Image (cartoon, rainbow, N blue to C red; front, side, top):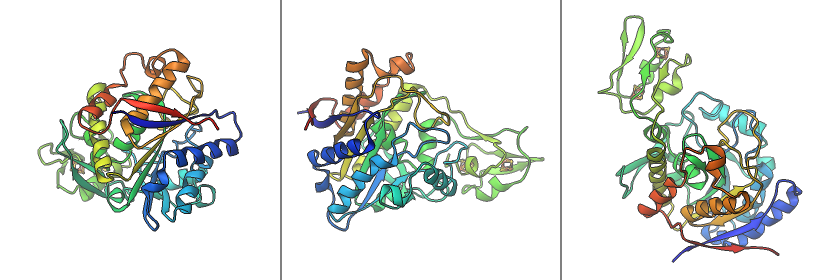
Amino acid sequence: MGATVWFVRASVQEPVEAIAAKIRRLFEAAEFGKLAEPGELVAIKMHFGEKHNDTHVQPEMVWPIVQSLIARGAKPFVTDTNVLYRSERSNAVDHLLLAHRHGFTPERVGAPVLILDGLRGNQEFEIEIPGQIYRKVSLAAGLALVDVLITVSHVTGHIAMGLGGTLKNMGMGLSSRMGKLRQHSASKPYVDQKACTGCWVCIRWCPEDAIVREGQVAWIDPDRCIGCGECLTVCRFDAVRHDWRVESAELQRRVAEHALGAAISKKGKLGCFNFVLNVTKDCDCLGRKQVPVVPDVGILASTDPVAIDAAALDLIREVAGAELFRFAYPHLDGREQLRHAEKIGLGTQKYELVEITA
Ligand code: SF4
Ligand code: SF4
């Protein structure tokens, strides 16, 4: 049997109040209020947009979700995790300053704005999964402590995965730094000797004593390194590198398995929104202004993270005449993440689309 995906047509050309009203109706139709009991903590997981990016989901679109949860007596907060690469989102301080600049303040979203994996992305927990690649995955510590997870995902193309939607928001977006590194990396980090200044900060931070002095520069012992990524974050000279080249299909499967971990941690307590508005070639991690590559479609809601991404892709194909990733990265097949997610029991690609028109 297929999952139910609720859908409302919308466009960013509409007044924000009109979009907010549609989101409220979607929340009610999908019965997301039933996911949370009074007093329960609800993480609303989204992406605040990289510097210069303005096509991400806007704070005003999160407000109606927050208000609907508060009306239920729940305690929502808006959140994301830190990223691996050097950016204003690689530690919680800079990340929150950026979020505030993009309008994600308690005043504008109606709830606190927090980072889920700690100051430097290393607060984590491990959860066992019935995966085909992993037996357990490392996720943001805060996820283990909340009662309910609502994901708010912006559907876009993606340079490595073809598609960035709910599965990516959950899999990569809810992983700890170690989880992200395991998904992205084909190898352990290494030190670029030309860039290393010999400041030795990484040696102090490495939890495994895997970094040693080799003359005037640092060296990482691959046999001791556990791939936690601590050194990547603390090196101020961009001297710690790692190989980001993981084949697209493999990356998508790894992301799907981390998303499975997040779903297992919130069994029966997960609701997903997909915003198929301002659909750009690249995801919101790209630090520059982007233009949409397909017309606006609308907003989707479902408790099934696979079905909601399948529905988003199908709706885009309907309005644009081809798969999203054909417009963005024609050599990639962004549906591999859906196929693998279905295979490991995260959800189904079969769905019934219920359009809300009133
Ligand atoms: S923190 Fe960076 S610059 Fe400093 S020793 Fe380590 S690799 Fe070299
Ligand atoms: S990834 Fe972690 S364990 Fe490996 S060298 Fe860097 S800090 Fe040490």
